Image (cartoon, helix red, strand yellow):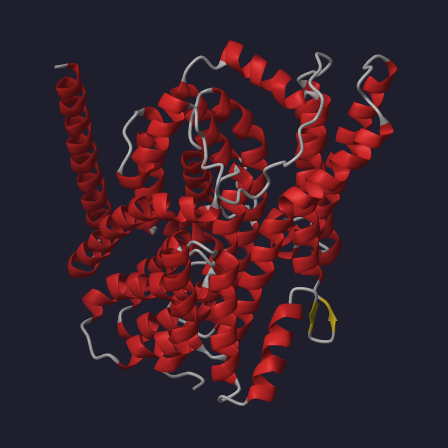
Length: 524
């Protein structure tokens, strides 16, 4: 069962079920059970053991505490606590009023969200959750659906991290390339310079960011997103109240006029500053070098996030405590209720992550990624088609496994080995295609942790986020695949990039003309 075509069944079961039933935990659980049965060769006792090991891997792995996952989960819970205290203190309402006076249009709110997503480029987890906390009051004020906010967050977090050398992604990828280049004398560039050179070759990121700016600047929406935006604009329904919304507070706190903008800004700024500081400090302590590349290669992102979350939550609680001097509604009892409410609001997201990590662990045991990569290695095809094929394979692998890091961790060495031997001039485009495809598959996968965290940060239902983002991701992927095909045939990165840009211009023009015709039709 392991390393064969059967190994792709568990992720497929989970993905098909989640799309059909919209019940995420049930679907992930079905995938976990299927994977455990296959890994145990249908032995009931062994299957139970695999299920147990998969479920506890988020807390205990390799004979020690899994601090990476535990810190991420604690950080998510702390974000819920921050959100609850900000709501309790009236900071959200005050910030919304401040934003309304300064950001006058929905376009301004969308552009701010997009620019924040690009500015916070050090880590995709941090980006997804922090941007959501900052932008959500503003986009809510301008009646932008939570699904649209989740799209902006998800489409600027991982894509930006995948091309930024000063990020947790960049550090990992540069280290991967150092291993690939180590055995070759034909390569004259360093891993860092290679990573920077690969940025314009990541056609999926180019297409995705171009589309994000286009849809942020215009009022054009596609497919299911159009329905969500129509409900938000016409009825003020930012999300479906009948669906589970991670991060949505269930408790109504007293309304008062003592809230200040600082009650929202100070906790978020504290979170950002402490997280950045801890990332630099942990990277320096572990790496022992003041080099920026060494720091980001060795930084402890989960610990940094946890430290930032703790400080942010303390600041939010202290600011509410200060109000007790003059706010007659402020009580210690409410502080306790806010803490509990904040933790409860994030529990659905934490549970989904635990199940997703369990399925990812069992998929790794089944060698699903290795099987998919071997399909390409065994296929006898022209080198010219390899960048496009590698892009598609990486997308399928990330979609099926729910992890972009796992996908490029498996495929980058394989793509590097193939290209160094067969076509060294296409080495960097092939590696860029691996990164592009991995981000694409991750964007589409409902079992991806970054997809889950983006919907959590935006306060959007997970499946609403998946179904609304999917068409945008597929369009970007088709454009990127054409670009990689042109690159492979011509041997020129710039010709491939120009092809991507031309296709995007044509699409934007067609969508703009179509929108104008629709407006004219409605006016008539």
